Amino acid sequence: MAVRKIAFPVVYQQNQNVQSEAYGKYYPRPFKPDTLSLRGLIERVAMDQSVYSRDIVEGVIQRLTKVMVELIQGGQPVKWDGLGTFTPTIESVKGGATEAQLKAGIDIREVVAGVHIRFIPENEKGEEITSRKFKDLVVFTVMGIAERVAVGMTSGGKQKFATNVIDLESWKNPSSTTPGTSQGGQSQGGSQNQGGTDTGGGTNTGGGDNTGGGDNGGDDGDDGLDKD
Image 1 (cartoon, rainbow, N blue to C red):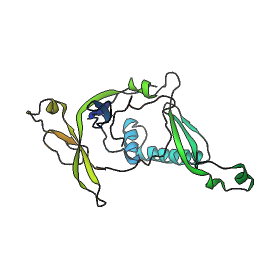
Image 2 (image 1 turned 135 degrees about the horizontal axis):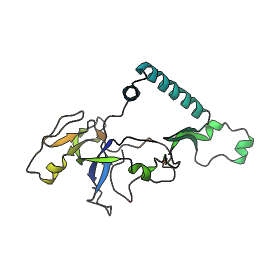
Image 3 (image 1 turned 180 degrees about the vertical axis):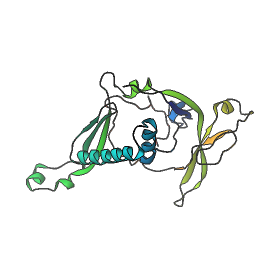
Image 4 (image 1 turned 135 degrees about the vertical axis):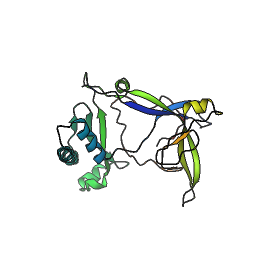
């Protein structure tokens, strides 16, 4: 599968967990632009494949989405060649069901806590996009140093933060400030604002499986960074 190499913007973020052995060290994180919507994806495909009109691309993608959801609802794993496999998995309630409960005809919905979609990246020879292989397809572009800045309080009394990205040269030489750019927010001397805020004390509601397909794609060790 021929894949164009497109710049992957990253930032360095400092570990500020004083109890971590990696305290003070910097780790790369994806620089997060806005998530591409279905409409944006359709426009991108239509732009790349001009022989297909936007209406045709939209119709195919919407139908594909509908059919994939229906298949997964029926417990059917779906493999998308060159991308990976989407597999439905079941999360059981704590403790499962006893033999007595099964014989008594317990409702299966009382035993199933949730259904998740597990994604396993393509790993066929010549098509691998697992974490280690995918790295070889990526061209990293360092945007700068990410810093969390307090921006006020929520109505519930929790601290709110925004993420500013300091241009790398400005960070190295604080005396020479380089005007920054802004993503969805105001620019602050030599920094880039990724837009939006994150609220401290929240919970991760992803509720999913580790979908690395046997290849741990996370950071090695405890980097002490916030996991968004």
